Each structure stands twice: as structure tokens, then as C-alpha cells.
Length: 259
Image (spheres, one colour):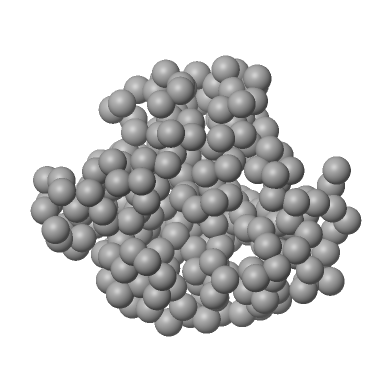
């Protein structure tokens, strides 16, 4: 696994714009190399802002959107179309505005979908989706994602993997149901850390002073049981994209904010 790299931007708006531009380049590079790209999306304020910025970016149309496979790192287990679902927010921010191939948009089931009100069944079904799209060279039941986007919570969670929760101890399954989350909504479906670590690159994006303690702990050697984001590593690259406030408690790693 790769060692963390840190990029600090002055504020969240600049972070989102820079991450969007970086993502276009990464997708285009992957498509040039092998014909398609795969990206794991995240929800939350920063994740949605990145997609909004990407939609506004003139370079958006450099991507062949029909050859992009999209997955989600986690999902709120709510009815289809619920405004709190990560899928709903991603569609409004970007996905409804680009010519995607619907067969390559791999959403996690809603609570009113084919698996009813069972997040466990939804998790098993998504694990099967991952396994079906894995290739022999992926060496497992998860595709080798080009980029996995993640947010980081105030207590250090990523995807819906919270500190000292059953999900953070999971070593075998690639997708799990998460119940009794400490922040609403309480029921979710999430990739596990082993699945996240199948990504070539993992980008952890977060902003604000409230996130600074968790960021500092993750970047200074905390274990994944205490700070799950510390266990989110890419095979080739692990990139922390922070604003100045979120980076404020890691002086040894702090870089001057980019313009």
C-alpha cells in the first residue's frame, strides 16, 4: 500500500475545483491507457461539491462518459430518489448532465428496491456486482478502481466505516450493511476497507477545523480501528486533499495553501 501524500488548498471551494480538474485528468489518462476508467464516488458536502465543479469545468467534455464505470463507496439506505441518498445528490450534481452508459452506473439498492428493507441483502447484492466486474488481473472479487473518492468525518470515519464499529473489523467481505450509525441516517451500505484498498488511488477529501484532529491522528500513525480513514490506502497512491483549516493540526505535514 502507498504512503499518504498531502495537498492543502486555501478553502473548500478551491479544493473542490482542483479535485475536479485532477479527476478529469485521471479519468482521461485511464481511458487513453486502456479504453475505460472506473471511479468510486462519495457523498457529503465536499464529494458533491467536487462533482458540481466537474460539471462546470470546460474540460468535462474531454472525458468519454460512455466509457466510465461508476461505483459508490457507501449509500444511505433510504428510498429511491430520497434527497439524502448519495446517488440522488450525485445525479443532480453531475451524472444527469453527462452521457453516461446506464449499464456502467452501479448504484447501491435503495430501501424500497428489489431487496426490500434489508440492508444486508442490498450489501450482498452489491458485493456480487463488484465480483461480476472484477477481472482475473484484479486478483480478487473487486475491480481495481482507478480512483476511490472518500470524505472524512469529524470522528475519522470514511465511507460508512465508523471507529470501533463492526464494519472496521471486517476482513473478508467487500460490502457490509451498517446499522446504528452514530450520525443519521442510521442504516447504510458500505464498501469495507479491504474493498477500498483495491483502488489504484484513494483520495480523502475534507474541509473545516472540526476535521483537523481526526486528520492529524490519521496522518500521524493512528490505527484504522480508532480512525478508519487511516486504513483507506490506494495501491499506487493515497492522496489527502485538505483545506487549511482541516490541515491546521498537522504542522509536520502542512504545506502552504495553494492559490
